[in-house]
Image (cartoon, rainbow, N blue to C red; front, top):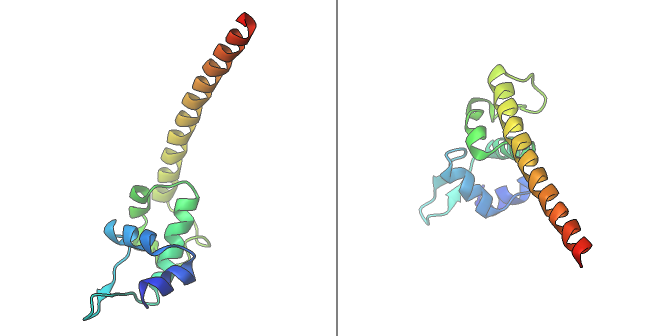
Length: 118
């Protein structure tokens, strides 16, 4: 399967697929003309990668799931490693949200103060 077809059947872009390949998450054979040729099973792997990314994980996080990307990732029981990674990612996101909330509150306060002086 060529990159365009894989992109179409997985709802992603050729650029994203090349990015996943650069990250070592998927691989392709090269045809004599240099075109990438993916196995049909790569579609499942890409769907699982997209599922994990949509859940808020990073490509670096997804690397820890390489051994199970070819199966029913969404329907299977979670692993301890997977849960630990998700908890760590959630903590990072919570910290970012808290930091952004503080910035927002300071900006809102400054805006209120400016309007009161006007």
